[in-house]
Structure formats: structure tokens, C-alpha cells
Amino acid sequence: MQLAHSELLRRVNGLNREIQTLRRDQANARSIDTDFVEISPIVLQYRRAHFEVYGTTDPQDAMPDAKAWPNSGDGLSYRDKLTGLLGVEPGRGAEIGPLNDPLLFKPETNVLYVDHLDTAGLREKYKFLNDIHEVDRPMINNSLADTLAGDAPLDYVVASQVMEHVPNPIRWMLEISAVLRDGGLLSISLPDRRMTFDLYRHESRASDMITAFFQNHTVPDVRAVYDHHSEASAVNMHWALPNESVYPHEVVNAKGALSPRIVASDHMEMTRRAQSGEYLDVHCWVFTPVSFLLLMAQIAGEGLLPFRLRQFYPTDSAAPDRGNHSFTTVLEKSSAPATELRSSFLEALA
Image (cartoon, rainbow, N blue to C red; front, side, top):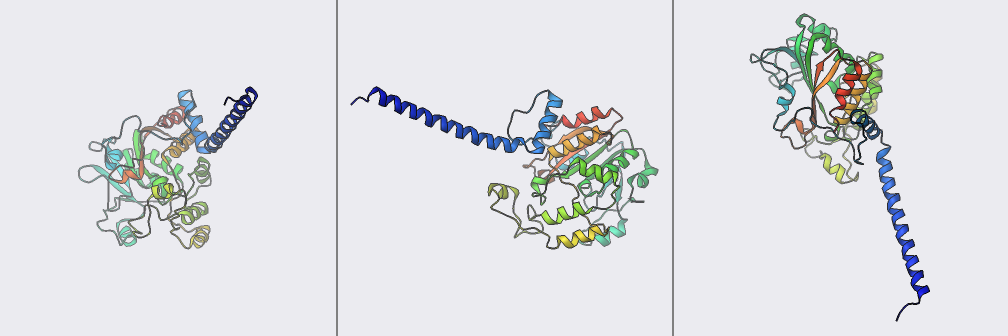
């Protein structure tokens, strides 16, 4: 039986309205998802930086990423990434905080071991560690510039998993710059928040670091101590909590339903101790590769960082060593204009 023309037209119009409603709902859903990403500060900062370097905005809706730049890190070990560009055989340099696991060894390299305590003090503090290496330069006046003044100018300084503990990183890098020759290198590695017990913490901002510099922080402040102890979770801590620790991908894939326990049980007591001025060793600073590059670019642009980015290696989750939860940056001492130094950090944005 054929439908009357009016009935057929009514059904077609109804179907068209349903299609338009579906399309509108889908567009709204996409808009909600996109808006959530678009208004995230780290994404907006990334897109602004991307436009600054490339003259276009990143067309992707996904979270930004970083790349190995200018050279690939394929096939390089954690140690290779930190030391491969230093020219350590003919050069003279320092390694900060080697403890029992240095990256550079004597007598193959002309390296000085620097730490916050002398050898006896470190062995007393870290009784659970064996084979702590002899410290050549215990810290003087809590200043790397004072500690290494008699050895300057150095060709390089290397620091593995140190800077995140430093209460005042800008001052720390300025002190290192003071003992490096022009063109000397500072090689550092930092934990990637996404792969560690810092998973739930917010990335550090340039304003936080600049505040620490202008207020001349010498100990981790209340913000850092509270944030560290109130949010440090049993993530990737199998070495310490084998029966409780979970992997980051388990938390992410569970969409928040899997909630690892907060490791500290006395975070407010630790916070009160920090308020009294006590030095409490914590992760003062939290980064992802992208947030680090953006923060360093901002500080360099303010004229507070006399380094350009020489090489960047982002976190490689497939690495068989510490590179699976850390990223590496090699900085070169430079007197170039602040705008040029800023741009060098943005080059490594993917």
C-alpha cells in the first residue's frame, strides 16, 4: 500500500528533525569534551607556545607532548642521556649527589663528587646504603657557588634526580652557572609526575619557582611539604610497598575507581614542622616533560636563567632503566638574549 504524499512528507520531516537533534547532541558532546581540554591551562600555554615557535596552533585536541630534540634518544641508556654530550674524558666537572650510584666514575673521568654532607655524614644518614662514594666537596654555606669556587671554571655539572628536591631551583641553577665556563653544560634528570608517587599532584608553575627565588627560600616551604605528604600515593612504589603499590596505567584505566592510598599518615604534623623552619626533604617541584619545558621557557624569558636548551629527552615508558619514569635535559650556559633562550626550550614541544 502506498503512503499518501502528505503522510510520507510528515515522516520525512520527522526523520530530518531526529537527525538534526542527533547531530546537535553529538556536537554538544564534542563541544563539552573539547572545552574541557581547551580551557586546561597547560594546553592553552602549550598552544600559545606552539604558535610562538611554528606560527600555527596545534590542531589536536589531545594533551600536548614533548619530543627528543634536536637528537633522538633511541638506543640510549639513562646514563648515556645524562653524560653523552658532556665530553667527560678531557673535561673537568662535578656530579651532585652521587651517593652509592654515581653516573661518572674515577679515574676514567676527572669528576668531583659534591653533596650536602661529607662522607661520614652521608654514611650516618643513609645507613641502609652500601658503598657510598667519597665526597670531594661537601657543601659550604649551602651554596654550590661557594663550594666549587676554587674549582671553577668547570666544563660540566651533572645532577640525577636532584633538582626536584631543591627549595630554590633558580638560585641553584644560577650558582651552577657561576662555576661553569661559557658553553659549559648542566645535565639534569627529573621524575615524570605521571609515572611516580606524584601522580595526583599538580605540575609546578613558574610563579611558584619565582616566588621561591625572590623570597630566598633555603628550605622546602609549607606549600611543598604539605603538597608532597598529602598527595604522595602508593603508585610505582613496588620497591617500598610491594603489596600495596599500583602502576599508573591501572589508576588511569580505572578512571579514578582505583584509588591508591596516601603514603603519609601525618601530613599535617609534617606541615607544622615545615612552618617552624625545619628542613624536610620532599619533592618541592613536580613536572611532566611539557610542563617543565613551558616553565623553563618562561623563566628564561624573564632573564633569570642563563642557559639554552642543548638537548631534551622525554620520558620513555618502554625504557629498561630509570628513563621509564624520568626525562633528561642538557642545558648550555649562554649569554644570548632572553628571547632566544626562551625559544630554545619551546623547540622541544612536539
